[in-house]
Amino acid sequence: MKHEDKTKEELVQELVKLRQRIAQLERSEIQPHQLPTVMETGNQLGMRTMDQALKELVDRDMVSYETAVVRVRNRTVFEKSLMYHS
Image 1 (cartoon, helix red, strand yellow):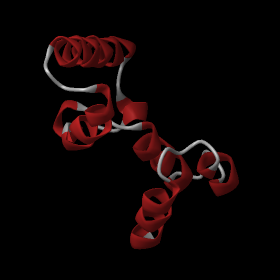
Image 2 (tube, rainbow, N blue to C red; image 1 turned 90 degrees about the horizontal axis):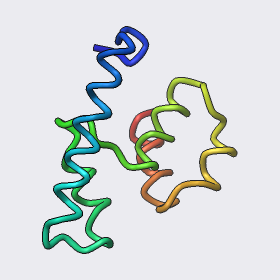
Image 3 (cartoon, rainbow, N blue to C red; image 1 turned 90 degrees about the vertical axis):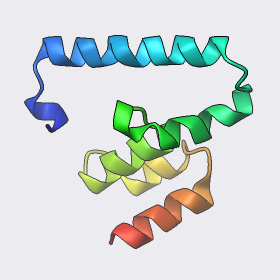
């Protein structure tokens, strides 16, 4: 289901699930520097890194490349992901 097709209640439930998952991660042995990797592999739970969210916004022409690239954590990986998608 696309984000624009979700109801407000579905979005709230998704946020609740994500917050619960984040709380679990905070209690676990995972170190803060490992969180981006955990989130990247947690796509099935709806987890995304900021870089992934920015890529999606650029792909959907909602944010310019120039705006997104200054906010990404890993510029090289971000640029490669845009090249592979094109």
